[in-house]
Length: 263
Image (cartoon, rainbow, N blue to C red; front, side, top):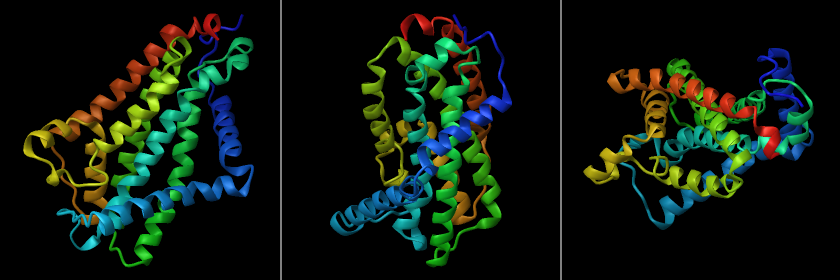
């Protein structure tokens, strides 16, 4: 029987898994790649219409950039994060034959899925930012390297969660049904469709503990307002995320030796 710990992390095999996932999900047909950009655009259009035309929402923080740009710069990173976690959650259970018959570091499966999703959504995100700029939104490209750092940290956080949920789903099948509504709840408790300034003070203090709020605020500050303010919470997040990744990997490896018994 193959054991997931019998081989270490293989960069070439990992690259092969990432490219396979990209081809399978996005490149094997034109609609797959087009939908990568079209679907978030459609959702963005729906949210923008509902909140600006029906509810006539006004975002205090948006200022001159407008609601669409305010929403777009945060919506794409969330979409990449959410899709990566949801897709990666089923990678071990979905590759039962590979896990059982081939000796390799099993953590490469969820990590490759997360990486492929972030790579392809990153292309879509860059395209949307260019479109926003062409349509008149003054983006601060000088701080784009800061956004890249935030996106790398977001990728690491997605990897950490993917390692945990993908291993857990092997033993608890209900994870596949529980995770999507949890991610939806997380989305609506993150200030993406709205501003944290619109929340009551007590609720705003609670939501401030949401790590996604930190990502959203940092990306908006850099791209839309050209602000870069570093504080205590930034240092905490930079340290906390690699720790979570380490814990997720340790959790995964602890239980990976038992995957074959439950697949």
